[in-house]
Image (cartoon, rainbow, N blue to C red):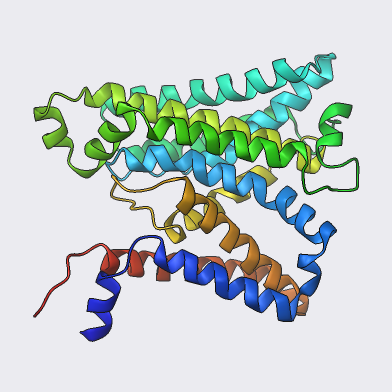
Length: 323
């Protein structure tokens, strides 16, 4: 009981912060190359899509009803293949058009999901799972196999083969975090937290619950667009399948960052910490030689982390008891 009471006294960011510090210390011993200029630059490049994918889940989860967008991975893949096949493949390489398409298409898709959840009243998890399956098939229809080439300006985002710390990818992440910071200063953010924590109370307080939920989904779609841009810059091409791998990682990072899947709690700090922890865990696992079992070990680690994080969050968010 003493251990449970201590867990209940922890803040939602305490566990991910402590884990982040521990992983950095272990990395300094096991994989010191991470602390070189190239190591930090590569870490930013590789972790950026996951950070942004986790951030895209945050407002949707905060809206409540157990809404976890399982389609976030295929959505990133869809935006990636359409950017390469539909835009770049037809000679449309303007950076502004690329960014607008990613953000508008992402917001439109999530808006459609929100309308189904709000007005058709299908469980959000069912809608998300259906979206996952639909987008997985659509991605293969748009591009049957990996291919295509990203525009030259996007290739330079990754340092042109020589990643740099202060690259456009870093500024893209910072721009997304600044956008979230602006959102937190609005009444929408306060209402979003209230809707996720207690929808009935929000409704009786005069909050337009349906509008807040729709805007939360749309905002998540914009962040998914940011994630797709960083992912496209990372691979410098189109890939209809690999984007789906971000679903499990983003959900795990979200929970690891202290967000509540029941709604009402979450934020950019937790999303970043959770995603960075996931990256460090994967990086450290890669520094060990597991041979042909490396892929299985990584999947096992992600599953174990998700289960443990859920348990910790359950106990940490319950009120402290003197019993």
